[in-house]
Length: 124
Image (cartoon, rainbow, N blue to C red; front, side, top):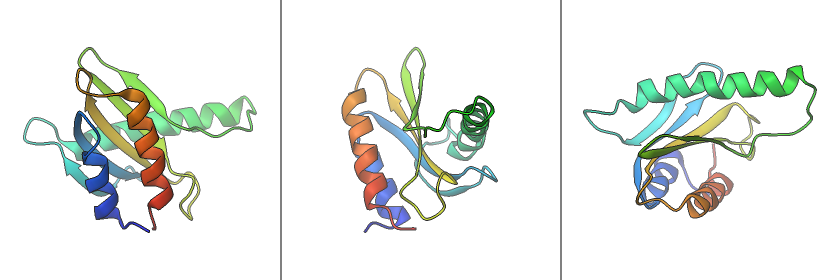
């Protein structure tokens, strides 16, 4: 089983990875960050993406859809942003992985596969 730092390092090996964060849905606080940089504050990005995850979870509840979110994809002109609520952790949907990818270098299918693998190995 992987700890948070190992999971974040693994996520940064995804082709095209710019940055990754493990985020608490209820507070928007990060449990860990890798990548990013001076022009990309992963803490701010993670907190903003918390609103996206919360909104989708609320919407599913309001319409009564008994299904879970595998991931949420945002496609920008030069980047992919993947949000993956972690169901395999003890807290249910209380955490999510956020990864930003350079679109021209990323393979979206492979990135989703790698995030599933990272989720399965994460021990929190």
